[in-house]
Each structure stands twice: as structure tokens, then as C-alpha cells.
Image (tube, rainbow, N blue to C red; front, side):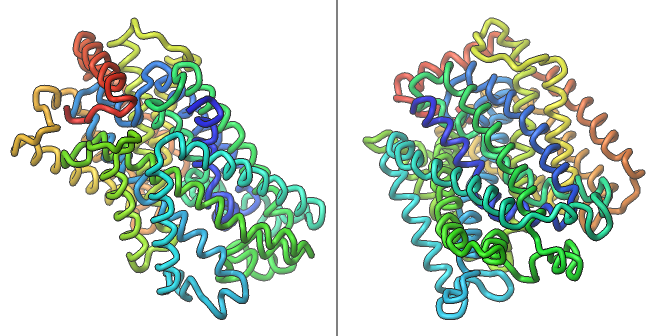
Length: 533
């Protein structure tokens, strides 16, 4: 892949179902102040994107989000990060499919004659069949290899960037009501709590995906030069686009409907196609038709990418050994099959809607992102001679800030999501231990470095406790003082950050592992080394 191929991989991951549904869910939580939610999320994720850009340029290996902790803290920490990365990635493709089917189902003829979604938001039998066919299509394209994935994705990304821009322009011109931004309780009807609560309810999810360029770095033509620039450009375009989409969405709402229904149902209860409905109300039926087409292409393009990157992550996990086998095109074929089967299985799970899945995926993504600033801080000390084609500005400030930002996203997602994700992390670590006990081929206990990973569980348990004492979610005790909870999370994060960096591996161990990986990828034509090895 070249520079534009990498850029489109990241941008294509950012622009998915988030643009179709993110503005609606953000407005439900924050009203007009959802604009602030997008600005906050853009700042937080841009810091994390700059950190990933630095890591991606210095360590151009496939499956980067899992490899960086491996270099800094050893095999056990690397496997843990890889497991979390896999958890968030494997369910994004079926989520995008479900969002696409929900949007298409808003068309009258489809809803009446060939319904894809039940009244309770679950897939009908027809919806399940169509969803499975979509997952099989993603698998087929990915079997062609990274070059085929890049080429097929380029046209999709150009389309899915153009349609949101067109929607913004048309809705603002035809139907814009400035008074909507202060309707039903003023600009911030739910205060700062609503602004922060909107972040894990679709805002952060919409902006995530910038790291996909670093996941594919092992298959880039010039990774040291292109990965960092691709991440930064994709993140900048995505952040600006989503902010403008929120402006267009809130401004084009019908003021009477908004006053009558409030922010809970600003376009009507049970409507799964917000921009489609607004386009029809503005008299732009032609735009409504384009939006339905895009409801297939935008989420579909993101699902296509995540099936491919998920396969590369499971390849790097290497459990079982069969997942490390590659095809003649350099594709981890059995990892790809596993990703597809798990995605299809997710479509069959009852009772999980788009918003519920988004909450868990966002929490898992934040945990995944948390490993990057700690890893870079550790590697700057333990691997100081490494060339960094792009250097994150003010690293002494930006790296701990990035870790704080990631933990705030976890906290705002609520205790219920946090403890479930902690249990999922524990399950993955148990798999690693079992593999070690049976002496699995791809687990090297000598490189596990248990002592370097001692910070992980104090961190996760601490986040669970703070989340339980806080007031974000439905089962929390609400004991932390309002507005001070953010400072408590930040202070705890800084303690964990500096403790974790102090547990880094020695310089000799880090340099040896990095060189071994780079040599492996050169010999294996860009395929990642196995995380436990």
C-alpha cells in the first residue's frame, strides 16, 4: 500500500455507520451541546492519533496496536493488548452490517414488503440472511490480499466522503433553523454530564479507526514515511466532517417536532434513518435515495476493512497455531475465516442493538488505545536510539495526557461496560496461561515478562472501582462529587502511567525483540510475528 491507500484505510474506518447514526445519538444525550462533544472527542482522539503516528513510523510492523506493548512490556502484555484489540475489531463488521440494514429498513416498501429489522431492533430472518451474505462478500474481497483490499477500498472511501459533504450542504441550504441549538432547555440542556455521556454513546465510536493504517504498516510500501502522515490526515478529515454533520443534523430538524418530542426523539420514535427522514422533509427526495445507497456503501466499506484487519490481529495472537498459516497472496486465510465466522455469529445474537454494541466496542477501543501512550513512553527510554520519522510534539506532556484521555472515555462509558470488558480481558489472559501450560508452539514463556505487566490489573480494577462509585451509566453508586470525578480519573491515570513505564523491559531485551520482529517480517513478506513468541 502507498500513502493514499493507507490514508483511505484509516479514513474508510472512520467514516462508517457513525456518520449515519452518530449525530442522532449525540443529540439525544447532549442536545445542541453535542457540538462540544464532537470537539472534545476530536481533541482527545487526535492526541491518541499523533501517538499512534509516532509509533507507526518508528515500528512499521503489521498489527501495530498489539506489537507496541509487546516491545515495551513483553509477551504477556502484548498478548493482552492484542486480545483487547481483537475484541473491539471482530464485532465492528457485523455492527456496520446491522446499521446498514437498519437504515435501509426505513424505506417504506422494504419495511412493509421485505422487513430487515423487527420492531424491537433485532434482525428478521431476511435481515440475517442479507447480513451473512455481506460478511461472506467482505471475506471474498479480503482473500485477494492487501493490494486488492486497498484498490477496492479507494473508490468506496471517495464515495463515502462525498455523500456526507453533499448531505451537509443540501440540508443547510434547504432547511436550517438556528433556534434548534437552544431548544428544549438551552444549548446544554443536560449540562456537562450530557456532553461527556455522549462521547461513548456514538461520538468516540464514529471517530475511531485512525489506527488502521498502523495495523497495515507491515504491508505498506514506505511505512516510515507514509503511516504517520496517513493517520494524521485521515483523523483531521474525519473530525471536521463529523462536526459539520452534527451542525447540519441539529439545524435541519423540524422545530415543531423537536419541541413536541424533546431530544429523546428529535425526528420521531423508532426512526432508524435520521438523514433520510430529514432529506425527505426538506423536499430532497433525490438526496434521500442517495443516502439509502450510501447506507450500504459506508458501513459496508468499514466492515470490509475490519474483516481484513481483524484477521491480521488474530494471526498475531497465534492461538491456535493454525491461525498463522498464510495463503499464496500473503493472507492469513484461517484467521480471516475465523473473523468472518465470529462476525456472522454476532448477527445471530438476540437483543443487541446498535447503541448497546457501540458502548462496549468504544470501551474496548479505549482500553486498546490506552496501551499506546504507555508503550511509547517506555520505548522512548528503553529504545532511545530508534529513529522516529514522526515525533509526537511535547511527549512529556502528550503521552500522559493521551493515557488520561483514554481512561476518561472508559469511565464515561459506565461501570457496566467496564467490568464486563475487564472479565473479557481476564478470559483472554487465561487462554494465554493455558497455552503456556500445555507448551503451545506460539507461546514462549521466556518472553512473557510477567513482572513487566504487573500494572495491568491495578489499572483495570481501579477503573472498575472508580466507575462503580461514579455516576455514568445505570448501576453506579453516584458517590463521587460532580465534576471532581474527572480529576479523580486523571489523577489515578497518572499514577498508573508512571508506574507502568517504570516496569518496562530492559533496553537490551527491547532492542532484541524489535530487531527479531523486523527481520521476521522482511522474511515473511510483511506478515507479523506471533505475539506470544
